[in-house]
Length: 84
Image (cartoon, rainbow, N blue to C red; front, side, top):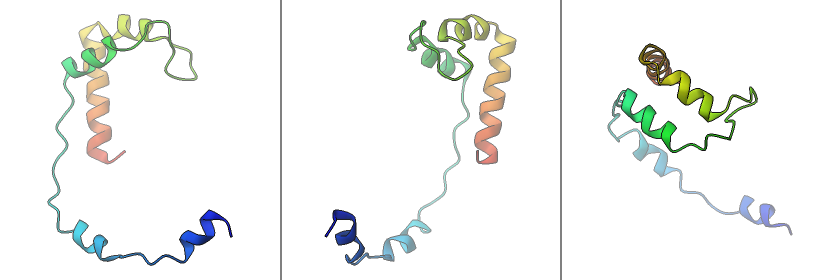
């Protein structure tokens, strides 16, 4: 019998799901520009984070401009607030 088949026959305590709804919902703290800068500084300049091949070095240069950083922070915070 395969390992996944053995798991199918185990009993699961679903009462844990009832406890989840009792936990208070906390709001996500908004991102700050400084948090983004600190995270960017930890990234390797020669690597590209996505399929567009933009390197972290390029993103660091662009996001060094305060107006661009403000837009990115606002987008990130909107995504969190909308649940994305």
